[in-house]
Image 1 (spheres, rainbow, N blue to C red):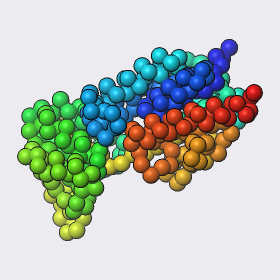
Image 2: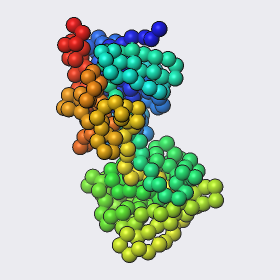
Image 3: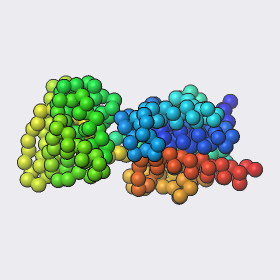
Image 4: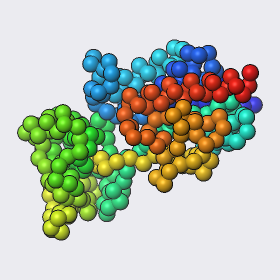
Length: 308
């Protein structure tokens, strides 16, 4: 027999954990399901210096671990189970996982986003063999080696700076002639002697015999093709929403981001979305946490009107 809950939250990143905290604190019977690592993308970030109150121990793993503990202390159940199917129509929703089924009055989708692939030759073949999407996860494999970082936004520059703690040299490759990252990050990167920059260029092939050895580049202005040596390639060119589970059940935009109103309500009655998986201007830990709190409170209001 399926276990029953008031609120089921799919996703254990900052949005899901914040939703779990607010839901459980209001005495709603709450379940948070996470298929992989608790904390989402935030747990792979070395420093969250722009998260309010994170001056001491500002690492992603530290902050998200505290989020999870806090939600559990208020009574939220947490389970590591991959969700395989959801049925969202009707008053009671069904969430199926690899271990069984759960039923709930409301569902909050907080599945986040995943790094976007470049789709160039060698990327998939050498993934895990020098191609990475997470410096915090893999930087120590490249101690005293030369690595390339693809991208010019906050994530790319944050990770490039982190890589300098391990690598001998970090080359940032950006398709434009200036970075998009925050000015404070740019200042740190330009001041770091280990970081070089290649402008107006994009990778067209990652090369190597079983492991990454070289990177082929194309200059967008001149069309010139060149190669640089690299022991590792870290790719940070954006993210795509993890919404396949529900994209045919709730309204999404052309990229798959879930469309909500300001109370995190989706097009499906009793279903809410929070964090990076929803269409929004700013995707940061602070906005994910806010989304989660709003979604949980909105779910409580919905249940009060619908079931009481």
